[in-house]
Structure formats: structure tokens, C-alpha cells
Image 1 (cartoon, rainbow, N blue to C red):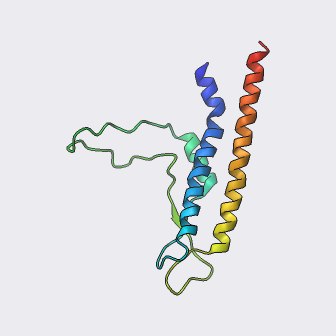
Image 2 (image 1 turned 60 degrees about the horizontal axis):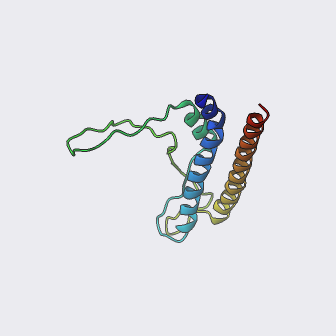
Image 3 (image 1 turned 120 degrees about the vertical axis):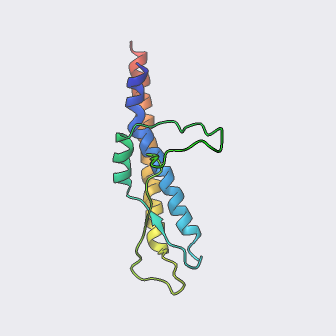
Length: 134
């Protein structure tokens, strides 16, 4: 029963985590708009979402001794690989943040984050309604 509930909420949970992470990345770009040589970064939400849904989340290994080896290819589905953005017109100081683009992406991601919260609330209400009728 709990496995089904987890599977029922997993897509929305994944979307919320990735939207939150993307908001942090975009906020970092905006905060560094005046930093010389700063390279703007982002990730493709659709690709990261599909990869996160396919991946089986695993708990990190306990690192209790400095001689313990950690896996070299550990992949966290909620830490998608960031890519550098190519600006249409580069700045003289080497900064690649295009403020208008970053603000637009930030606002778009915020709206989609709110939509994901709304979808999650609807799923909870639907599940609550199904449980109360029985």
C-alpha cells in the first residue's frame, strides 16, 4: 500500500525537487550578473526529470573512516549535470549572464514550481477523498 502511495506522489515530488534546484541555479546566475568571468549555468529540466524518474535513489554510503573509498561514478538524480550557457553577446569582462534571459527563466520556473505545488495538492486532496469514502 505504501509503495503505491509513494509511486503516486513520486512524479510530483521529483518535479518539485528539480524545480527548486533549478531556481537556486538561476538565482545564482542572477546574483553573479556583475561578477567578472562568471559563467552562467543551467540544466535541461525535461532531461533531468526523465533521468530522475528512471533512477533508483540510493542512500549515500557511510564514510566513517578517511580510508573508506567512495564510488567514483555516484549519480544523484536530483543533482543534474549543469551546462554552461552561451550568451548571444558576451560581456567585456567575460561574464556570460544575460540578465533578461535569466530573469525570464527565473519567472517561468517560479510559475511552473507553483503549478507543481498545485498538482501535488490536488493529488493529496484526491487521495484524501478516496480514503474518506471507503
